[in-house]
Length: 176
Figure 1 (cartoon, rainbow, N blue to C red):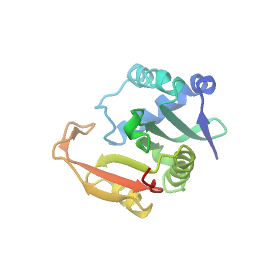
Figure 2 (cartoon, helix red, strand yellow):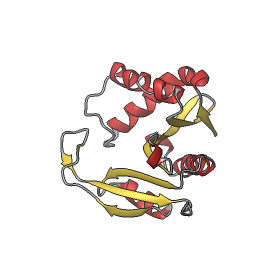
Figure 3 (cartoon, one colour):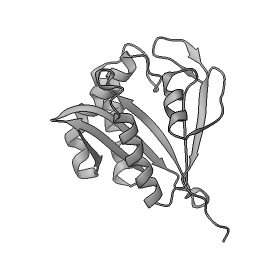
């Protein structure tokens, strides 16, 4: 398995793989912003919508793959306001259903956290569906649960569900 941080140059070559990951996640019930049925055109439009933020450096994206087969992906959206340059939001941690429980999500998150640290982003946050298996994963990785909002998002099958908000402190900045 290889984990690659995509660049504006390499991003387009992985367009189909990213769409495949999104479709697999949504069809598997992941609440990641889409409802069923999800078309390939919808997934590709979502992928294409990421290009500008990758190009301007406000979003980092990793792809785990093996011999051209997509296994997983994760994104880090950097806060760009002057007063928020210490934080970033983790988004769309997706692992193919047939490749789960093999350490792919853990490896993707390690790559993301290493990059966040190098960029001086000491506070990471994310949200996931309350009660989902993702909560156990994030807890085991040292993330702290801080609450959630009722009926935050609609699941792929049309059920409104609460979210669960987590954060992780990689380091603290000293007062300046």
